[in-house]
Amino acid sequence: MKKLVVVLILIAIIFISGCLNYLPNPRNDNQNDFIYPEPDWVTEIKNKIDLSKCSADNCQACDKNSCKNYPNDCKIENKMYECGPSCDAAINYCVGIKENSEFYCDVRGEVDPCPKGYKCYDSMSCPKGGECGPQKGDLRCHKSCETNFDCNFLNEKCELVYIARGDVYEDTKICLKS
Image 1 (cartoon, rainbow, N blue to C red):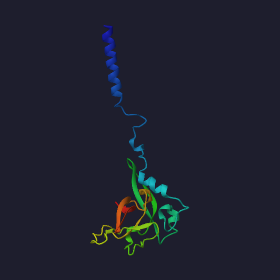
Image 2 (cartoon, rainbow, N blue to C red; image 1 turned 135 degrees about the vertical axis):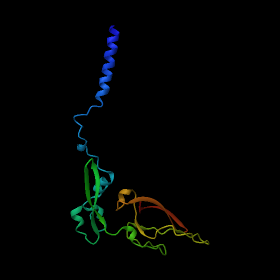
Image 3 (cartoon, one colour; image 1 turned 180 degrees about the vertical axis):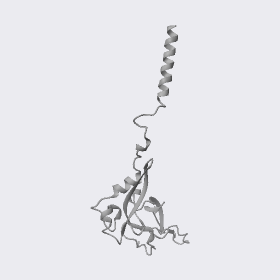
Image 4 (tube, helix red, strand yellow; image 1 turned 90 degrees about the vertical axis):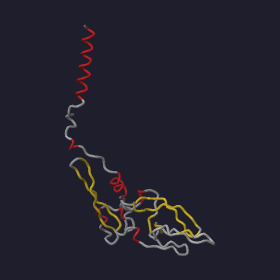
């Protein structure tokens, strides 16, 4: 009889502890209070801000106020993101007015016409004594980069591309629209 009572008590304890998992937690019953962690892209934007490097050529280093100092080169953009149930947040950030790919380029005589820190995506293989292949680049200036963090715009990624100019070939990383 004692064994039966002990078994019934153990079963009751297991049953009750299982039911407790389904009861609302008084510390967490209001899901509207839960805030999502900040998205990585928002953190990247904030980490790029460095007022000592803020300039017309480096708009992403400017905050909202210093961005206004370069009205011909930089502009303020605003993007919304979700921060939790019934919660939206926005970030204001500074970007260059002209995207890198708006600048047409054509490499002639091995001189890259793009500004310093940019690379012309002009890629056409022309082996000596052979026919030139098709143009594989977009003939636009793109920012040189090592990581996505180096790219100026949210819709750009740092990608490794193969550039052929004549019979010279190189791998280089540039910011391309994703």
